[in-house]
Image (cartoon, rainbow, N blue to C red; front, top):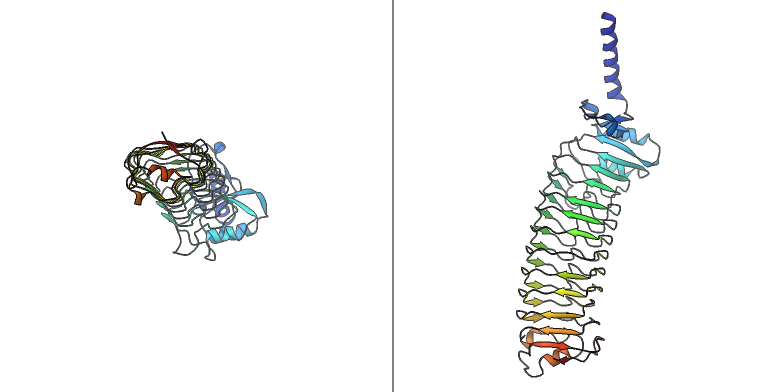
Length: 392
């Protein structure tokens, strides 16, 4: 019995020494405590092996420097108290960034920091870490800060339910990211948060989001599906600009504001319904949506901005009676436009000379030079600037 106890004591001491001194290879995710020990239940066969587990960033730097370059990612589990700017020497992001040919799957789920950010005008913790393949974040985090993962090599990331805000440029130019789910506790998505994520194909926006900032999904050319929840009240300038893979989108009745250029250059968009809560259509909102053949403008709209529908594929349009102004080039280069119905009058000073192709404006004010004549106007040759229109 005494010999058995001595043997068990020796094994225990050896295990502790090995755990503290040696980087761990092939450890399952049951080992939750890194350099501080720990552990837990669970089926080891169903959890991934880790190449390194620890809670000291400097020790991780030493370990990573000794590893060979390889395309297969190293699975790393770290428990840290904070994340510093990537430009800070010795920071976790800086260590990963300075080893660009060593790809990393990073598990931070056991950490206890609340924010991923950096000082203003500095680079986020993982800015430019092209070899950072995936990240698991702790459920203590409430904010993903400005440029936190900009230009990182992320293919996947799970945003914890604890997060309430995704700040400007957080995932800007993460060109490997294919899908994203924004949890229900997030209330705002800041400007350019996912701009330039060219591989992003689907986005699920949580029911707590009230605003989609400027250029949030700008240039996400593969984005084919996005659901905007009924909680959203505003869509920022250029929010979906250049999302050429987007074929349809439903704007919920809760939205009261659609920013300038919000859907500009969405060349795959074929139809859209603007809800009755919207009162104005801004500058270049749908410009160059070349396949956009159908759009419904609600009676609530009072103004249509400059270039709002210019260079679209519209074949017909109805202008509601409440519209009081139509801006420069709003429809002027719609070369397929053959039918326009005005449901009300428009004071001539609010109807720009170049709003529509051809002589449509002249025909509208032919008998009433101040207010125009409501009705349906058509052309048999919708060729743009030289189109000749007739009132039906």
